[in-house]
Image (tube, rainbow over the protein chains, first blue to last red):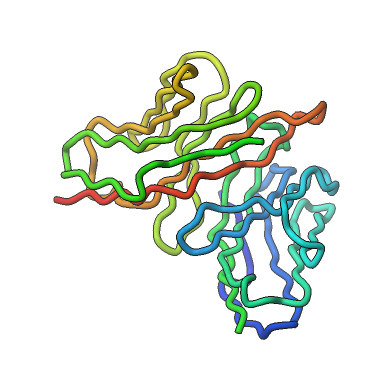
Length: 114
Length: 117
């Protein structure tokens, strides 16, 4: 079975630009979460979606937005990119949104902002 | 608020020796605790979780973890380490919020495990 897939693998953008990252969850999983992982740190929670509705949001500015589609795939959008947005962006899927469900992570998208 | 601490940046162990990676947490209410492993240029892989019940949880690849409520700890252990266990290990905690029963993962900073032949 395919795991969580993310695209693109790597991305280089310039400050002020916009970026869209994509994620496809494991088949049957209805919840998708997004994380930012800066080098040397643990992942930081950005968003969680379940059944196309936002279920949680971390401490990120409004430049970050996301959505979930009817097929449960998801997009993370970041506007007005800053150098500090350079990080590995991880998508994770789970069967549902409840706290007892473990999340399964994709390989991530490495975003570099120059 | 919730938080996770992994007090060791790196753990060095010889192959065949026991491996322990420490994790302490702070959360109001009942904690839901998880361990993940990350290999270079890869996403995180789920190892095990504690939700309720037996304090000793067994997971993937021979790993286990012991939940200690009084010490608010959830240390990861493996009786005999392999070179292939060399990776970055993350502890994470979740708690239920309100009536929605969802909760964000709060990850620790990670512990690099180095297993030498």
